[in-house]
Image (cartoon, rainbow, N blue to C red):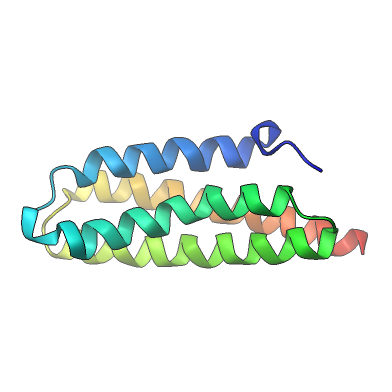
Length: 119
C-alpha cells in the first residue's frame, strides 16, 4: 500500500483543490448547487481518486484510478473555461488555474505511463 501524501502530484492536486474552493466562494449564489458544486466535486475528485488508487492492491488498479483522476482534470479544465466565459473568473485567475490543472494532468499521466511500463 502506498502513502499518497508522499507523491508530489497528490500534494499539488490537494493545494489546487483548496485554491479552487477559495475562488468559487465568490461565484454567484445561484450557482451554489450548479457550477460551484460541480467544479468543486470535479476538482476534489483528482486527489481523491489518486488516494483511492494508492490504497489499491495492484498496479493495474492504481492505474485505473489515475485514469479517473486524469478525466477529472479534463472536466475541471472545461469547467474553468465555462466559468471564465461566464465572467465568474478573471482572465488572470482562469489562466493561472488552467495552467495548474494541465500540469497536474501531465504529472498524473506520466505516473500512469510509468505504471503501465512496469506491467
